[in-house]
Length: 563
Image (cartoon, rainbow, N blue to C red; front, side, top):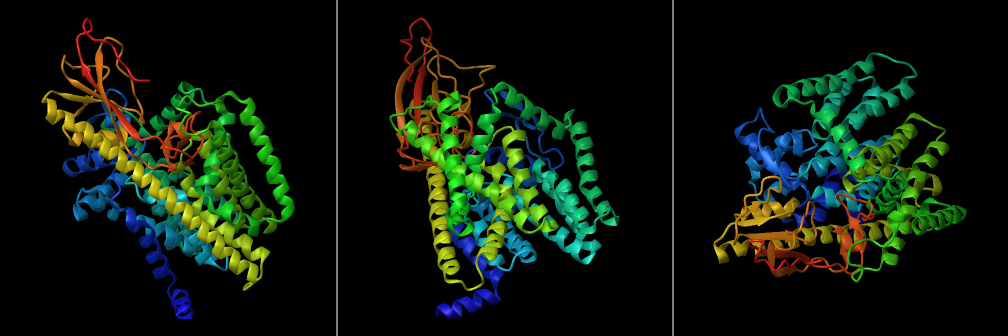
């Protein structure tokens, strides 16, 4: 039976990969919307009624109402896709997640196809990419990241094949996919210099093939002109300005950014750590050990890694630092894997493509993106999967016993961790939804206006219950109104003493020993800061809690406020 299965997989690798991908994601398709999912859903709803004006409405996403074009930092193509998916499957959580299964499948199959040009075991490369925490978690959002990567990987596939065969039809389609990637997420435009460099290394001179890169450049120009006509701003340039503003406002530190980017790289692409015994010789681990000591010294001396301001009774700061150091060293291993491939392959065009792909993604996450997060690491995962397969081919001959056993163990460990992290993210989103629904019951209980602070999925479900986001720039609350303030959220400004009475705190159990977002554990997969340096963290996780306040006249309020 086992041998028959192996023969079927060998004969039908794409079907096998598709089945494995669906099996990995299916248990989590009912995941509640969370983090920035609501932004994309609201724009998709706008597209239904005004398809030529996707950002023509206002939203309270930063403590006050702003135009949507000012609240979002992404182009709209993913929202058009989301609107199409909603038309086919509905607006429910399951419906929209099913709509985003095809992009995830496209990435897996595209990785397999691209790996076939650079290694002899493309199935291994695709599985190594699939079972990374960042791929599975990102596949279960309705944001733009997975769709962008789908366009990215197939643009790379068609570009490589077009260069190999001098097939200008493939190059033209690749140019269209690059344009689509850039209109899904601005980072997709990085394909232009990446594939241009690959072409120059292949052909050794400029040629007609370069003209197809004008397709995405012309598309971005038209997008800039169109958004300026609609909204009075060039939205691509505005996104760049936003990044500079956030870095200046948040006390950006290059040291912190590099270490956090290393940690996210190691954790989000943890498969490279599990395969490390097969990838590196023993003496290399001495270097990794020295890197761990250096990282520990940096964290001990650098103020940003002191005890975080969260409730350390939940997770020891020392345990957080140990996890940070471990995944940071794993991140160094990922970067070293790309550089080693370049050296070992005598700097051929494929090696240059892979190393620039990985190092470029890392550099963007560390230095150019507005924050380090899992989504900014996601684009490197196909390249890392291919690099792992290439390195194993170099280290072990086909059929080698250590190779066979080691691959099974490495993949099993990767599957286990990735599924655990994905489950933790699922449970977190569910806890956020339940906390919002419990808080929403206050509206029916008291019959008074219900206001709330915070955003993300919490805002989405609070508004479903009839509550209103508090506009701190133009508050219109009255005495007797109720205010809901979540603990694990953003843009929180607790009531000043004398303006509100704390009635109660509602708590909902969240994942207990592993989480993707909690200040107390130092983890935030979606938006790392100087206090959160991990994409996910083990440790005791506090419940999702919300404080319920009764707004009262300043003269009579006792002025309670939770810490």
